[in-house]
Image (tube, rainbow, N blue to C red):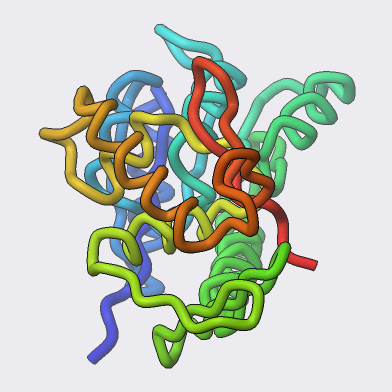
Length: 229
């Protein structure tokens, strides 16, 4: 049996969370609830949901702040749910990484339809089997890596780090996010450890490791893997 999708609901209105939970569980989806932004961020990191429903009127952080923090460590589809019909705010949220936007009150049948669309998009992205960029080719099914036409042998940790880059290709990934994804939450302060493994990957994958063009440093923030083309 496959594990049912997990939906994280970040909203401070208990009645709405209850209504959403009943509707989503009727579709055999798992539901995780958070009543404010900070607990929502923790739940997103710990539970790794498949879709996030995010209210923008939270008591501690704005939905926009939560969205920006979410995008520092996850590409999970985010559907904004809001009682405000501000067109400018809607555009700002979508430009900042939200995948969809729904106005309150909404029908639960439409909400479920939007979630199904988000799940399909997420699954399609996850089923990409070959990644290519700047001389790098990764066959994710065969776990085969070539760089500039030559086969590359990677350790298990190097390969997991490379997969973390591929998952967020073209986007800046923070040091904390990479450390959490590859080594776990207990290693988020081991920045030097991350630098060592990034340097090892560059030596194996870059045409010129001294001037990397594949794994690019974003000063003070993290790294970015060149987008596929």
